[in-house]
Image 1 (cartoon, rainbow, N blue to C red):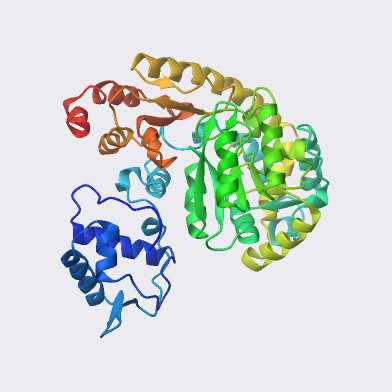
Image 2 (cartoon, rainbow, N blue to C red):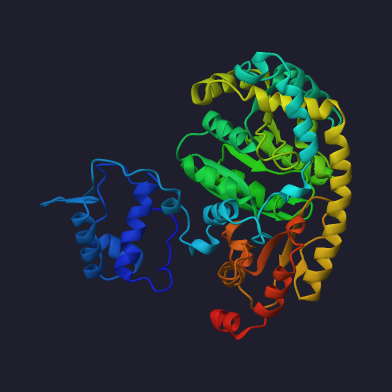
Length: 475
């Protein structure tokens, strides 16, 4: 058994610790069906536990049918694989701070539940009347728009319009280099299927959007993180990772980075692309927050000309999470392979969503909505930042747009403990641990300023950060 040695969770027995380690290796496919487990002596030495602890762990796993004992030979993984469990593969966190759990409770929570940790805008901030108007227009349109599959690449008029919009950021992508998807998440999922195999290494930022980690777990990739700075990834560390791990992909945001709100600088972008060329690295540039920018930031795809950079986007955050419409812009030969993969996994695209997005882009509804939204977000950013600072939370940077503030908590406060107490009071926070496995992230939280209007949020922080309950939890 290779890999980084974990430590027992709080309150976990050593036997349970060994059993969890074996389960995680099997769930992550590091140990395949029929694979021989380490000897009792060897595993005891590796995990720094007694031989009797390993014997008991193996006996319990054998009783569950998870592993099998072969007399005179040792222990082996059972001949069938259990269903894939992302929770088993990932780091063992309290469910209140597990990335998938944060998403689930945010999606399932009541409408009046404060959600400063979620990653989307409140429904009231979205252009509901414009969406209704577009839906009425579509209801009067021809039948194929309402009932038929889209073409493999997606609605051509929308792809033409997206091509012109990308040109405004210096990205030259013809309509036949663009494929529509159901969302930005689906775009990354397709690209992971296309580029990597189980066991391949993928680089992400530290911190990064937590669903990158979840998606890569599902693809059984090895994830390596590189520290992110206010102007982009730490290039010295990035070069070390490329030389040592030989990764296949790098997934990042270049504009309005999630969760930090940072913006990639032109100098870092150029040096990053040189490193990518030297090490034959493909880059996925997630640009779903493009329309939230006050001023355009550099795009890797613009400097690279879509040679080794794949550019993706979506309207889920800016227009509607119910109207699922995203896109991939890439080299023509890659697009051709991605089309086949998309047909194999989801067949046709969502034509109705594409038609609706096209209508709202063409009639000016979307432009007016985003103009007003950027102004509203800037005001909310200032208000939320001032309130957080008054409570002793310090923004990592002052973002140039968007909805996120990445804040450092007062000295000695653990973000996970704050999130756990918040959940007990019906408030959903996003502690740093869901965005990064680095110990330094324990003192950070991401705040969505659009979701910070409820006074209960700041009341809880004001009392909770100073309370004996939090102090006892971190002592």
